[in-house]
Length: 254
Ligand code: NAD
Image (cartoon, rainbow, N blue to C red; front, side):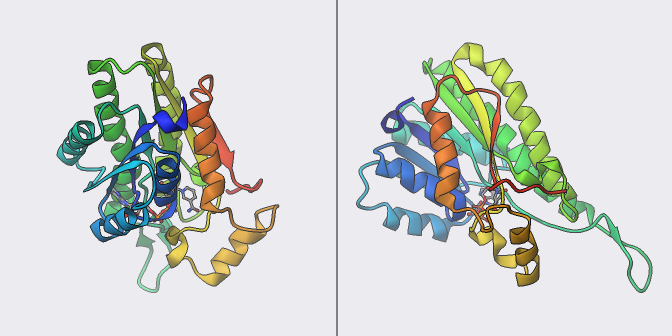
């Protein structure tokens, strides 16, 4: 697919990787429907994109809310015309150990902390992909792509069982949907970034960040543009399907 022909939904576009994906697409003349729970961030995106050639629509979106997802895809379709790309990028961290020693007895990971991450990182992409793919079929769009943003942590990482499970689950969904949808002209692929310099790292201590860096053979964090290059490759290579590209400087977690 030519990037200039892309009409994309990008979730989690108010900052970080999604923000970069949206701006890169707009720079190439594509259409973008940017959704996020952070409406102030979406307003900033609108300003940042003012002089770019592509068409941008921004709207509040909680990817874990079934009705909101249907309304967003509907709105995007009427504002941008036929969509052919979905970038399932919105994601959150709520790190914690399963149990930990505390003075009064074992502390347990709250189940709300477990479910919230699965709701946003796994159910969200499911709801988005379902709504998007149904519409692509209904409107007989000839070729379309779904890109799921996974993570290096899918292999397992202490303190991140909820996150790792959500991203490993998303990879399983990528492989499954790729097989289900390719005959209908929809490719599905993923990108698994390593540690990338975005605001998601704001809560990570300097000490933890140094340890993360030390585990990256290239000796630095990745930049959002380097993840975009993987997204661009998937969009452009029509034979790429059902796989997840790792962009992690050669790092290994777990
Ligand atoms: P980020 O925190 O900077 O941005 C995430 C965006 O998602 C935010 O704008 C946030 O408001 C939005 N969001 C959160 N919950 C949402 C919801 N329910 N509905 C809609 N939007 C929601 O994070 P990032 O680093 O840009 O990460 C983007 C994706 O890349 C995530 O899926 C993340 O898991 C993945 N990832 C990031 C890294 C990294 O090191 N930055 C590494 C591997 C994977």
